Length: 168
Image 1: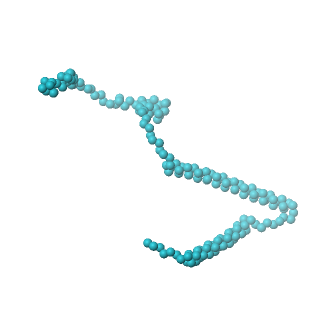
Image 2: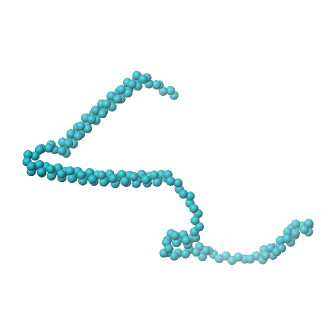
Image 3: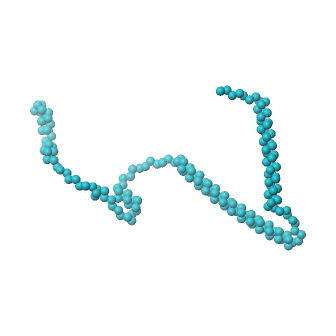
């Protein structure tokens, strides 16, 4: 499939249109920021009336110091919350890396351990539990075959009999 190439004049025209629209959006954002700032200042910062006497000036200073203290406390609380959140984020990032499995799993080694040793390792040295697995097995008596004892005899003689021709 072949795409039609755009002519340079068309490309420049579209680029200028996009830049014009972006310029208008940025200008609107600047105006909106100014309006928001004025609105915030009018709500939270009443106009400053200069005191006429020294006592009024001292009261104004005390009031401003209380407001500064309050703002500093809020700032400190927010900074501590942000610090805790960033630490938690770092811990979670580390957990994610661990869970992704970037680390190679080591090859497991064979361990020769009896059942008693395993129980002692699992339960600790305080618990003495012996697990005799052979105690529950049935006892089977072996019957010795007398015929097999006779056949064992002299093996040379046995071979000569089977070979035939009297050992030739």
